[in-house]
Length: 178
Image (cartoon, rainbow, N blue to C red):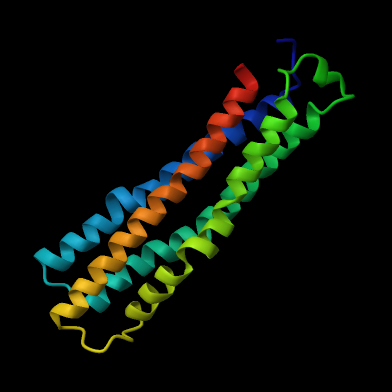
């Protein structure tokens, strides 16, 4: 590969590390956060409302942190796609189809937002209602079972969502190396 400008290399670093960070940040909630909350619910007899409030804390932090990181990461990938598009001087030294692959990486990165809205809204809304104490009987075994089921479903959906930016990062790396 020929010499790419520093701005291009910075955009690559932002795209690759942003996608990896985003994937890890999302996955950590499924692998560490929610399982710890469920363990506290069982071992320490935390109420369903308090356990749901723990989840809500994770949710609120993710909701505030992840969209800006996704937007920045997607923007970096779009800049890379634009930089190596057909007709540019960088197109000649870039890998074949790099512009398309960087565009795909950008699309994948930002697609965590519609994934969340389409795939996770019902579960999120049910858990948010629990966090607000809008359940019939917080102390019943039915409430425990329902909360555990909702958190397990959310954990699976969220783990799936974490694979989206991971895939984006891999596509971006593929655009660079192959």
